[in-house]
Amino acid sequence: MAIVDIGSNSVRLVVYEMLVRAPSQVFNEKEMAGLGRQVATTGRLAEDAIEKAIAALVRFRILCEAMHVGELRVIATAAARYAENGPEFIARAEQAIGQPIELISGGREAVLSGLGVISGFDEPDGVVGDLGGGSLELISVKRGEVGKGASVPLGGLALLDRSKGSLKAAEKIVKDELDKLPQLAAMKGRDFYAVGGTWRALATLHQRRANYPLNVMHGYAIPPRDAADFVRLVERADASVLDAIDAVSSARRPLLAYGALVLDELIKRGKPRNIVISAQGVREGLLHEQLSAEERAADPLLQAARDYNLLRARDPRHAAELIDWTKAIMETAGLPQDEPSARLVEAVCLLSDIGWRAHPDYRGEQSMNVIAHAYFTGIDHVGRAFLALTIFLRYAGLKASSPAADGLRTLLPPALFERAVLIGAIFRVAYLLSAGMAGILPRIPALCVDRRLVLRLPDDLAALASERVEGRLKQLAKLLARDYEIGRV
Image (cartoon, rainbow, N blue to C red):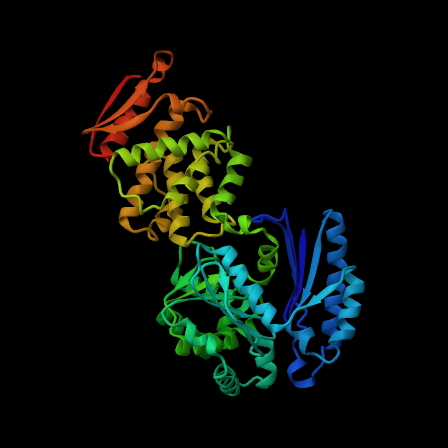
C-alpha cells in the first residue's frame, strides 16, 4: 500500500510492503515543491509550486502502478487547507494522482501525528510536536491514546513568509501563537517528540557536531539544555556555515533557523524532560489507525525482529528454542531481569542468525551495521546499540573490537555491555552445538546448578561435546563466575 502526503514544503510518496504493526518501506521519494511558500502573505499557492507538485503526482501515479500498489491514500495538509486556490489545486491533484484526496484539518493532522509517534515508540508519554512547512501541531500522547490537538500556522515556510525573512519578527509571531496553546503545560517533565523534516535536519546537525556514533534519527534523544544551546547557535549561525554542512538538503537550510526558533520557544515554555526525534508522523498514523486493537497492541520491535528471523535465519524455528535456552541460563544464574528487558532478550535471539550468508570474516561487522541502522521502531538508541553489539560479539568473538563497535559501546552503561558480552557468549555455545537448526537445543539443557554451569547431553548427542564446545562453555561459565560441567541427560 502507499501514501502520498501533499505537504506545505514537500510532496512525498511512501510505499509500504503491507499494512502491519511494523511496516517496511519499499520506496520513499519526495519533491520539494514548496506549496506553502507564499500562502501566508498572498493567500494563494504559487503557480510554479503547483506545477512542481502536479508533475510529482503524475510521476508517483506511474510508480504506484509499476509497483502494483493495491491501496493508495492521498492526503493534503496546511498549504492546501489555508490557500484560497486550494480547492482548484486539489481538483487538479486528484486528476494527476488518479485518487480522491483527503484534505485534513489541523486537528486531524495533530491526531495522526500522535498516532504515528504511538506506533513508533514503546509506550510513549509526552507531547508530540509536528513542524511542517505551513503549520505546527501539538498533541499529548499517553498509554496508547492521544489527547486534544492544536494547530497553529508556525511552519517554517509560513514563518519565513509572515516575518518577511526577519528572525526578530518571527520570534514575536512564535511567542504570540504559542501563548494560545494549553498543550504546552502538558509537556513539563515529559518527553517532547519532535516530528518533521526541519527538526530532523537540526538533529542531524546536532549528531554531526557531537560526533554521535549512531547515524539514526528515530529515537535520538537530546537533553533540553543541550537542545536549547544548540538551536540558539543555529539561530545565530551565518548561512554560509550551514551551507557547508552537506548532511542537510539545500532546500531545508533556509528553514533551519525558523525551526530552531520554534523549538527554542517550546523548550522555554514547556520545560520537557528530553527532546526525542521521531521519524514517524502523519503517514504512519494513517496506517496505525487502520489496524485492529489487537494489532495495535503488538510489539513493533518484536514483529520486525521476527520478520528478520523469517527472512534471514537458516532455520527460523531455531530462534524460539534459543530464547528458551538463553532465558534458562540467565534465570538459573539468578541474573536480574530488568536490564536488558525480556523483550530485548527475545529480540536479540530473533536476530542472532541474520549474518550467516556473509563471509565469516565480516559477519560480525556486517550484522552489527544492519541491526544498528535497521528500520526498527519501539526501541531507543541504547537498546539498538545493545542488539547490534551482542550480535557483533556472537560472530566476531567476545574480545573483538572495531571503530564502529567501540562507538556503539559508548552508548551502553557498563553493566548493559557486560550483559551483551554474556548473551553473545551464550549464542556462541548454542550455535556451535545446534548449527542453527531446530530440534537440538531443547534436548541439551544448559542450567546453572549451585556453582556450576551444567550442559546435559543425551547419549545420541554426546559426540557434540568437542574440544571447541568445551572451550566456549568454559568461557561462558567464567563470565557467570562458575565452573562448568558436561554431563548426561
